[in-house]
Amino acid sequence: MKKIKKGTIEVICGPMFSGKTEELIRRLVRAQIAKKNVSIFKNAVDNRYSDEYVVSHNQNKIKCQPIKDSKEIFDHSKEIDIVGIDETQFFDLSIIDVCNKLANNGKRVIVAGLDRDYKSIPFESMAYLLAHAEKITKLSSICMICGGYAYFSQRLTDDKSQILVGESEEYEARCRKCFKP
Ligand code: ZN
Image 1 (tube, rainbow, N blue to C red):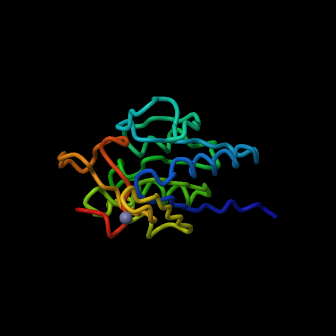
Image 2 (cartoon, rainbow, N blue to C red):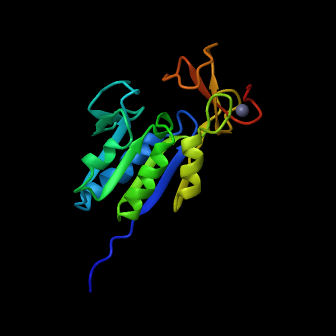
Image 3 (cartoon, protein in one colour):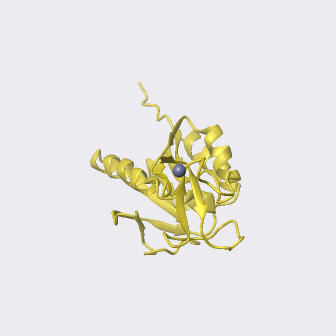
C-alpha cells in the first residue's frame, strides 16, 4: 500500500513574550530527533539577533532561511517534510496560499506569530491562517501590571506603524483589563 503523506497547518499564536518562537523551536527540534527534514523560514524584515538563526527570547536557536517573499519557501522546501515559519505576521496575504499549497502537498506546516497588533487588531494573514489550520495553540504571557494571564501586546512608545520590531523597551504583555489601546 502506498504511504500517503498527510499535510497539516498548525498555528502557534499569542501576544509578545508568550513563548511562540520557543514552542515553534520545540516542535521542530522534536521533529529533527524523529529524523524528519525540517526547514525554518522567517521574514528578512526581522533582523533581531541573527540572520541565519531563529532565536527565542531565552536564546534557544535553530538554523533558518531568511526570505523576502513567501513564495521563496517553495524553492527551498522540495525535500522538506516539515516547514516552520516564524514571525508569520510580517508576511503579506500570499502566505495563506503558500501554507495551504504546502499542506496540500503533504507537508506539516507550523506557523508562529502574533495574532493581533498593539491596537488589538488582528494581523490579516494570521487571522486567515487560524481559520485554515487543523491545530491551533494560543499561548499567554503574564500581565506586567496585575500578574494575570496576558493576551494583549501593549506598546509603550508613540510609534504608530503597525509593524515595529521590538523588545522589552517598546512592548509589554497585558491582560484585557490592564490593556490600554
Ligand atoms: Zn492585568
